Length: 203
Image 1 (cartoon, rainbow, N blue to C red):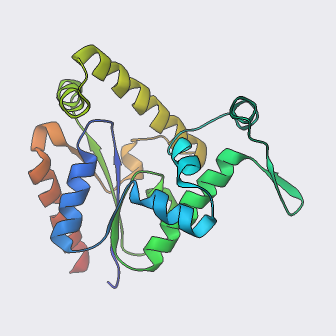
Image 2 (image 1 turned 135 degrees about the vertical axis):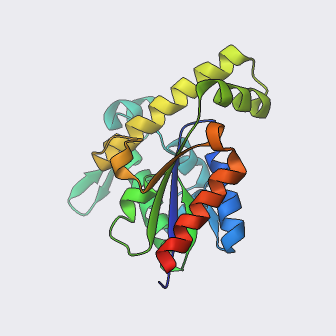
Image 3 (image 1 turned 30 degrees about the horizontal axis):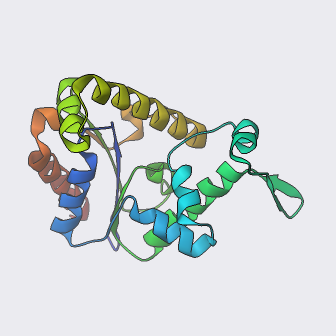
């Protein structure tokens, strides 16, 4: 197998980012999460701030454009909404980094965007709510109630974004090759199991 593309979907606060970094380090391949914003900005010419404002956030194109003061952009004979422009830039960035070789990509519908590529490994990370609250509280300096509210809001946002851009259900087992609970396994063990799955593909 020439290239390996590991995509990681994750519930908010489940440690998916940490697991992805461990897997990338063990395989000595690039890791992309927020880093995709820089790639998308460089290749699309859009500002990083603009792309960040739409990162994994579904919107009603017309209403959001009015609120934000953005208008649709004319591309050829079609009007492209600003949120679709951002989504297209992220998609192109994912395809671009994948063209360069093996990598780990967190979120942003990468599992769907790369669905036809050989060497794709699709992972979803979940965790018990209590464990997620504890992680987010410590990481973001929030009290447990505020952490839980943020978790529920972010999960809803990610689910809507994924469903809008893929017509699939976010977190559904049939969309992934392996679903892992970081609260049950721990971050290190979850990373080890992903690595073992990858080893099995290469044999």
